[in-house]
Image (cartoon, rainbow, N blue to C red; front, top):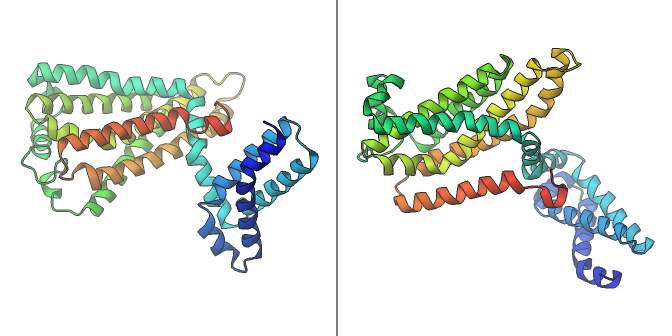
Length: 329
C-alpha cells in the first residue's frame, strides 16, 4: 500500500486518538476522566502501535513516522500512569497475557487435563454400566444427597435441599469459596514434588465421572448435564490449569537442572503464577454462571446451546487470544 493510501485509510483513527489525548491532558480531573475514556483508549492505542510498526517496516516518510511516534509516546504516558495503568495492565493480562502464558506451558496443561478427564471418563463409564460401583467412590448418604440435588423435581437443580432457599448471591459466594479452594489446593499440591497436584486431579476426575455416570443411569441426565455443561467450560478448564501450575512446581523440584531446588522453584514459580491468576479469573466467571444461570429455569435445549457457545469461547480465547497483535506465543 502506498503511503498516501495508508494515511487516508487510517487518519481518522489517528485524529480520534489525538483529540482524546488532548482532552485527557487538559482535563483538571484527569484521573476521573481517564477512567471514563479507558474503554476507548486501549483499542485506539493498540491500533496506532500497529500502524506505527507498519510505517517503519515499509520505510514511509520520516515525517509520518515522527507523527505516529509522538502519538505512541503520548498514549503510553496516559495508559501507564496513575490508576489507569493498573486497570490497563489487568486488561492486557486478561486479553492476551494469560492465554499466551498458558500456551507457553501447554504440555503441562495437556498432562493435567488428561489426569482430570481420563479417570472421569473411565470411572463414569463403569458407574453407568455397573450401578453398584458408585458406592465404592461415595457412601450411601453422599449418593442420596447427589440424587436429591439433581432430581428433576428439585426447584433449584444443583443445590442441596438445605441450600435450595438461599439466594443466588449467597450461592455465588459459596461457589467462589469452593472453586477457589479446589484450584488453590490443586496448585499448592505441586510443592509435594507434583504428587499432590496429580492426586487431586485424579480424585476430582474420579468423583466427577462417578457422579456423571450414576446420574445418567438413573435418568437425571438432562438435569445434571444441563446444569454442569455451562459453567464447566470455565471451571473444569481452570482446575486443569491450576493442576498444570502445580506440575510446573513439581517438575522444578524433581529436575532442577544445574540450579538448586530453591532457585529452580523460584524461577518456575514466576512462570506458573500467571496461570494461577488467569485460572482464578476463570473460576470467578464459572461461579457467576453457576449461581445465576445453571440453576435457572431455561429450557434444556437453550442451556445446551449456551454451553456449546461457552466451550467454543473458552477454546478460542485460550488458543488464539493475543496471537495477531502480540505474536504467536
